[in-house]
Length: 74
Image 1 (cartoon, rainbow, N blue to C red):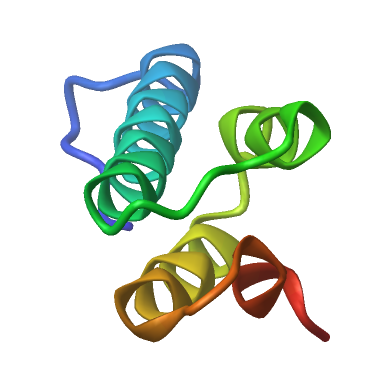
Image 2 (cartoon, helix red, strand yellow):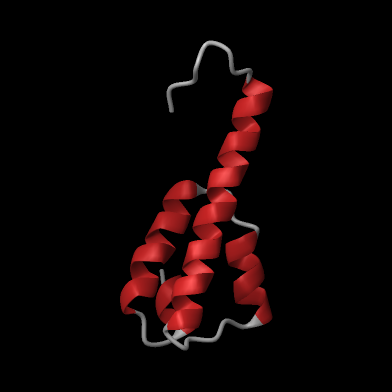
């Protein structure tokens, strides 16, 4: 990510956290809309994740998953 000259590393860290939170919300929303229930530990895994690449992978899998386990497979 290219940071603006007026943004400190401190601010950038909050921007990244916000992006992760937003992506996590979308993963959960897609699964909810598709009627796929997450167990409490699975929901926690998504909401606590700060790895944007991992969240993107889960997002893509959530689009076609049949079961919650399909999202988290290795």
